[in-house]
Image (cartoon, rainbow, N blue to C red; front, side):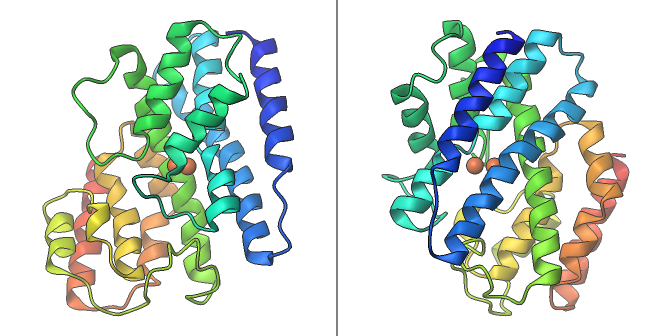
Length: 259
Ligand SMILES: [Fe+2]
Ligand SMILES: [Fe+2]
């Protein structure tokens, strides 16, 4: 991997994603959002990598992973008009299939290609499999933190500036109901990330995103989440019930203890 190969991959990504256009304003906004999310993830992973002494080539690999991790989102949104993943159609398999069919990684060594695929495959899983490729682990941890930090940035703004229902796809078509399940409460109080399958309402999605604080990997990640006030910003959009106050306090203390 070298700078020239990275620039060529970036050029491909730019050209490929610019092809996605929609007359539906909400879908177009989400194409734009996903493009900027990919570029922002590159910026954040570059910052976080200062915590793990990567050499120049490893930094380029990390940036490539960040740029391409959600490449399947464009096809998913065009074809299915949703960001909801399921067994058959999900942005992970779609992304890997596109990178293979367009020969995007053909100039890279096989080992690097496998690291990139491993990171894309596992960037959103709730628990990392034990069988993970050792060489991919640091990159995967960097990607997971960088991805989540940018999502927290996008959503903390969205929840404070937009009424519920403004961007249904970004809300994963979840209902804006006040109920918060016992399972969700228990996960947060046990300092565990809320399982995706337990998210049934928009408020539970907000708490799920806040609970990523329990799965951050780098000191610098805790620092960014704290300095940007992401937990507080999302908390302000939640109903101020006792259980919500408890959960917020638990996550805030966890964050402070890891600074
Ligand atoms: Fe993703
Ligand atoms: Fe992402």
